[in-house]
Amino acid sequence: MNESMVTFQGWLGNDVRTRNAGGATVAWFRVGCTPRRFNRAAQTWSDGPTQWYTVNAWRALGEHCAGSLRRGDPVVVHGRLSHSTWVNSEGVEVSSLEVDATFVGHDLNRGRSAFTKAERRREQPPSEAVSPQSAPAEVAPTESVAEVPTAA
Image (cartoon, rainbow, N blue to C red; front, side, top):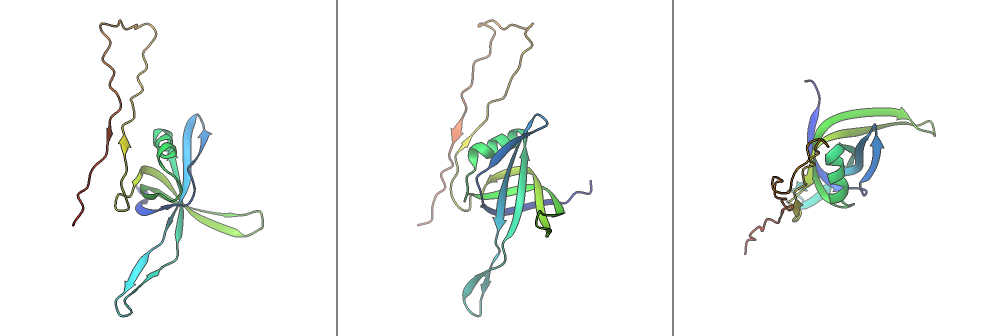
């Protein structure tokens, strides 16, 4: 496998948008990553140039991103990196970095997040009717919030 996999941290530049592509949900959003460096001699921080990535999340991951992420959220993204170059309507050559996400999550260095486990979709063939006595008990989705002790 000769694909470029990347993991990066940044901030959502827009709310997640979704579309349907070939029967599958695709969510897309932009993530801005701005490096910060500390100059020990001057005792100051300085920001480098912001690098923007377009992130595509397919199927269930895309649905979860759309339901969980908002503009300004700190995120960590892992996925396949690709580079695109095209000429826009004004005749200017434009290039962009795109990531097909494999994993997306909130950056917990920046705050807390609540997790809700998604219910599994179970489809039964119509010929296999289930009686109430043999049906498994339904399990409610679980929510957990990790409490992190703070240093005094």
